[in-house]
Length: 308
Length: 225
Image 1 (tube, each protein chain N blue to C red):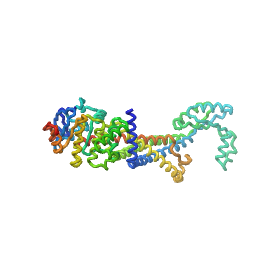
Image 2: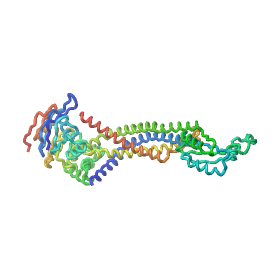
Image 3: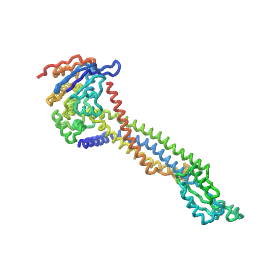
Image 4: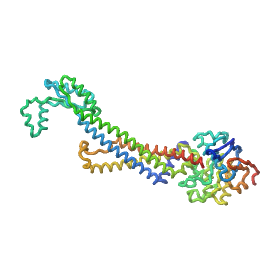
């Protein structure tokens, strides 16, 4: 029973504090929102960069040219062998005629250049798209080596330099996520913590009085942590709303960013899991910021009161 | 009730607040701690309710060594002690009733029960009409009576008052002192730190005199009728 009475006390304290110190809480939530907006903008940039690199990766294909003696009826079995390989997402057969047609289409007005050539001048091939996890220079090389061992395949080609550049780009994006994300997260944490600490000084009396009437540490901390969670979630909600507005503004400004965004077909908003991540960070920062600030404040208070 | 043995408190080299103090206080006794400013009166009280830890020595309250309590034990100790301060220490955003009830709620009482008891106490202390007022709307004497009601709500066996009349006029001081002493009838042990000689002369049955952190006199005398 006692625990319910104490829980009731905590909730009443939270309610009273939200009413009584509305503007202090609003200021803390706004600061959290600004900090999370910066972090969210980074996530937005990083998400789109990932899509961009993924788009480049989709263009990475391996071409396997077939021996001239491979009969059409053996192609089905060959495609099955290729598609069974772990790196392969799909394989498409290009016959002699189709290869010639594609080449002619590519030559356009100069397609007459092919007129003197025999119909099977261009080799039949299999175009192989890679699974997302296998879109790297190493995977492409491994697949090419395995394909070369097949009795029906004469030659294997893939854009090696392109694949290596893709690796570097993916590596940079991956590291940027952790390095800049980590730095920004810490910055956000310290901003929120400092704001909470300032707000705490306004509530110094409340903490002291609760201690003097014999409130346990948990009872003193609980309302602050709950308020911190509410502030953090409110800050995250504001930040997500502002990011949504920022995203639409960016959509309007898309022309400014030039052709490099073309593979994306425009920029994309944060996926649901990253929106959830922002909300979770807000929640965590609010509660942890409050808890750490309160504990720091209590230590300072003990030290200063001991000197009086 | 209280046993203090060889108690010393130092805030660093050359900053000794209390030096080797020993005394005992029996249950139901009223003791005044007197002395000039800086004599160590407040420090002694802070050590008794464990706002501070002693540099040396031991304190037992009800047979329990309070110098060795962990934070949970300290909170528990304070719930059994009624504290009254010169600056009242009331929460500005709560009314008188809720300020008093808070101390009972912290100890696990229900909201309804604690408010009922708080109202009874405020009525006893002459604040029946002022229960809904916030501290800033109350006079110094009224605020101190609210603080006394808060100190009493958990039926403490021990009341510690640090300069309880320091921030009120003479008339209110007299009233507050009488209220505090009335608590003896409830069986409480009362320790009052004050430098107000008039109060000590009028009400002091036992006086611990501190000077420069040392206990220089422990004087017991017959109570005034």
